[in-house]
Length: 364
Image (cartoon, rainbow, N blue to C red; front, top):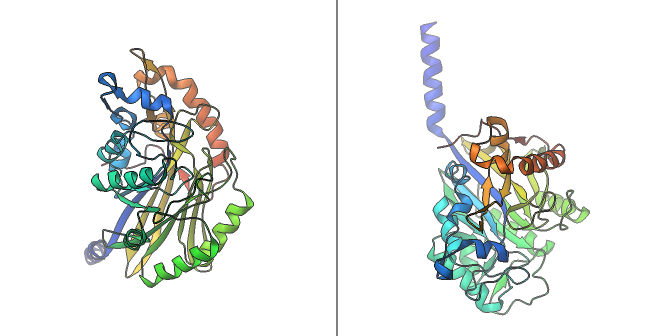
């Protein structure tokens, strides 16, 4: 028995020494409506502070190696505006970075809200904050550096590509580039990406129909096309509500698609727009083979109480708090969070092999 135990321990040590793991966390739309900008104002508008928005979700960001979200505003400078032509204060980027976000995708229908100057300033601010970014680019030199965006983490090589269906009819001003969804272009991009030999190819897409809780035929057909041509993981945004997510195994390959993560933070308050989902994917690499070890989703909800005559915006880990018990200080928001969870779980019932996280979500 003792030799067997020793051999088992030796195998475990050997396996762990050659098996690398990386944890990826994805979240949806970071919006910047006018009420959010007003809420973040400090000292009569001399500066802004968004840190309280993320304080309850920060431990979940910190639990992952790579944290990726959709920045659906420009950082175009003053005057700061919400819908329909978004420009948020730079402090939004500061708060995201300080809370643990390290990757932002920027190709969405609001990329050109502030024209050429806004697109370029957004990139400049993200670079100043040392974000990994992709989706919009200054010029051909910039896109060559950032598309596909290669990320090395714990011995695992990832490729991230980001595209949008459009820019709300606002033209992209040369030499700026916004990655647009186009099958032939994406096919060529995937061929280039595969030649770089990443362990996993991730595509973050701004697609679908707003406020629809089911993917459109265009979404499902495009997902099938991208999987056929080499994508491994597809993450979706834009509908402002969550849509189902599926992990399947086809043609000897894992295929994970999240059709929509919904709103991460916004001022939208009608059914299902007041929250979203984060998806946590654990990748493992052993003897050159990289696979999805685990995939979970965590439902989040935005609470907007008025405290000291100012509306606040807090993102709550609703899935976990629902199971573990809600802290006393959010009791006034309990009913709203429960309604969101009830509606969101109806959508998530259609998921395939991506379970809802509860207290099992590991925090560092």
